[in-house]
Length: 317
Image 1 (tube, helix red, strand yellow):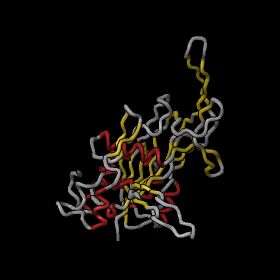
Image 2 (spheres, one colour; image 1 turned 90 degrees about the vertical axis):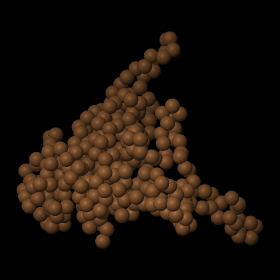
Image 3 (spheres, rainbow, N blue to C red; image 1 turned 60 degrees about the horizontal axis):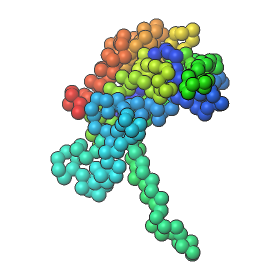
Image 4 (cartoon, helix red, strand yellow; image 1 turned 120 degrees about the vertical axis):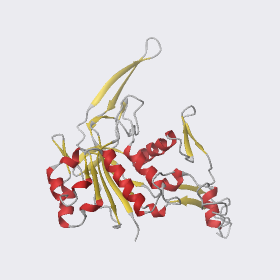
């Protein structure tokens, strides 16, 4: 059986305008969805993935799709994915450890796809010539869309910006005072280089800005509380388990699953304020050492367990 790493993360409370939707007139809207019968704001998984990749880049780790601030665009290191092509052809690993020097961290964890159209159309008889091709790898690190823990009340900030003499620009921005919760899943054994799973956990534990709105809002997207699960069970069973009422966080669905035996307390590593919630403490009474006051302590212990289970070196690449 394979080892799986799952996580449920909730951010700090703040004033957010993180992921824009379609503008309505001069109002910049938030992306929203209907969640449990009410309108909630949301941040896309793509935006979180972008921030994860940028975190790696900022730590001088080798990523294939590098963001260049001066160009306001990405720059590819290898847009043909030679290392992965070599693996399929049987050439990988001829010089040293298989693929370690030929593939990039973000391609391994987040995947990639390059779809090329057919070079020639079908002939008069309908016969197809030179079919299109797709070069792809499914991401090992899967991330859900983030959803606000409280419904969106419709708050809008109105602003003005001076420009050319005699002209003033009026605009508004939807904003939401809330936390966001999202989840992730990862099977390290699917990675070309297994210890890259540690870089994934490092990024998720320290995300800063995600999908900022023209620098008008600074929103801390790092975890305030986290629930990590390391298990042989292929089903996460803890995604979107946080609930907020009157400013306080709970995780009643998780407690139900713990009490029912669907999740074992020994599989969980819980950090942040949620670890002090009494019903969760009671449900985790057989494993009190898996509750941590801070999220970094929870991530640190989880990384130690993953490294031991996969027989990885203590210091990842």
